[in-house]
Image (cartoon, rainbow, N blue to C red; front, side, top):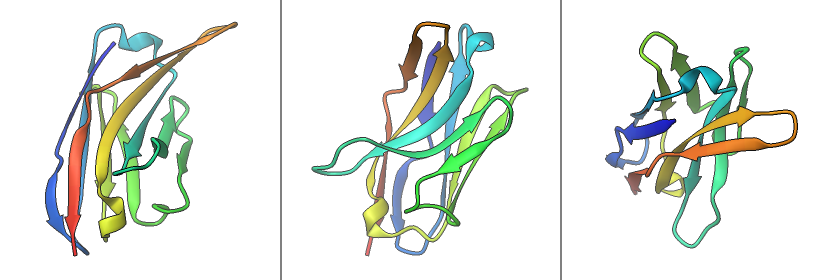
Length: 118
């Protein structure tokens, strides 16, 4: 599985951005996908996740502002980010998971930088 993010950039506080994650390879084995981020001097954290069953989960810090979605035809996942704040500045990573009886596989993209200016 190969993941490639796009859509990052510089935006002013209160603005919006949409990130995309294009998946290729053995995508039929993916059980769940999500977005993570790592801010300056911080650990990587989950931002939003989506299972193949359509269930979504958001970090408290972005709930109500960010929306995760998936287009199964385009094999692409999106993260719509609204009302951005400087605290949202981070490298955003796309993640895909394969779950097996005794283990899980995680795949990561290289990340896309989002910078929110005050």
